[in-house]
Amino acid sequence: MVSAVCDDSCHRLLPVSTGTSFSVGTDRGGNGTYDHLQRTWDAIIRIGRKSEHDIRPVLNAIETGNYQLIKGALQAMAMLRMVPKKSEILKLIRIAELPAAVDAVVEYPNDPKGLRQWVAAAAAGWNQKLVQDFMERCICLTDDLLCLAAQQSLKGKYVNWGPY
Image 1 (cartoon, rainbow, N blue to C red):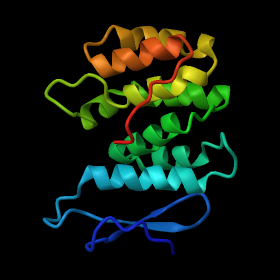
Image 2 (image 1 turned 180 degrees about the horizontal axis):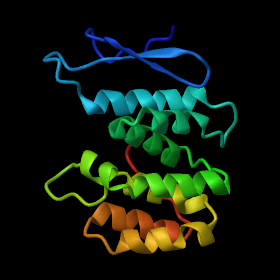
Image 3 (image 1 turned 180 degrees about the vertical axis):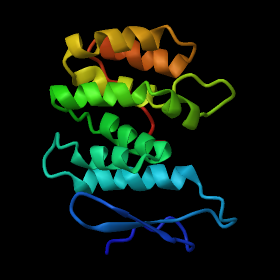
Image 4 (image 1 turned 120 degrees about the vertical axis):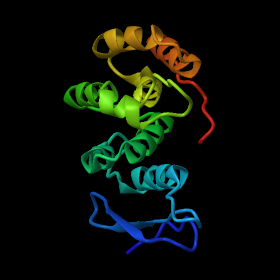
């Protein structure tokens, strides 16, 4: 077992594509901090892939159904500038636009972006024909960071995000 130690109250194990498990901690109050989960998935994506554009660890995060984990995986994907296959791109877009994903990933009241920001940010290096409609839908939403990510991706430019 490899432990990504978030704090001294680690209690949960998550499988990854390599069969390795990672311990994911919670905050001292036991409420579970999503930031810890996102950072852990960031690490899992970075060390769990077999090649530069292997998104299997991202797909593993999606399979958990935990949108905060998925967000962390997508953040890593964007920062690593991973380029998935056509079928994977279409799957990522579908997941990013799920109403449940929008409702589950909220950073402020009425936050419209959900998982869209990180898919839009990652898409700068993807096939523009596949992502064009998605980017245009993102630009129409009221979130400045989502709009920036989509606009820059349409130009084929990555935004330099801080890691968290």
